[in-house]
Length: 245
Image (cartoon, rainbow, N blue to C red; front, top):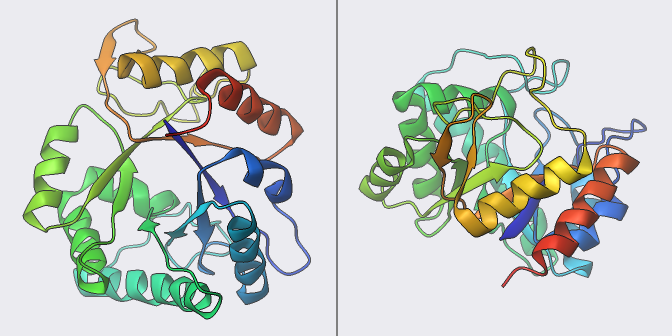
């Protein structure tokens, strides 16, 4: 089970996350592309840091929402989504090519990610943008009970699809993440987080907050490095699961 983490989310003199501490522990870095966080200096620094540890570099595009950290839904046409994906992936991929690398996948951020999981038309727009940028470029999306439909839609657009799960978030009976506004939506206990990581890796699913078993296949597990406690949890997951194959 490969571990991915949202990184490069600092901006100017403002620091977000513990990139240096978490990078050696993960397999895939989802790098902010300037729309919800980051800037050219941060992007270059994050790419070089990922390269130093052999970590795959993914583009983490978002709506243009620096003030809201990309968490506010902004209406877009399909053509506008196409353009914002190209703009952000292209910027990060250009930096990667300058230092002998390439963007390895795309994982939408925040409200863009939430919107595409609710609206098939937005997901189709994202799939088309990714395919038109590079036919072999994978798209990473959250695993849900609709994973079969999502795989079929991705295959229709000839886009490799990677499914991700979360070790530190609770799931409802539909296989959706419980809203952060609800009590218990985020796990903070390391033992609980590690147990959920093992459940995804070894059993291919997890129990919902209501106790229902959910078959949720996942190619990658999303972890966080926002603070020392979350970095400690990533270390515990890494030790429990071992290095990814």
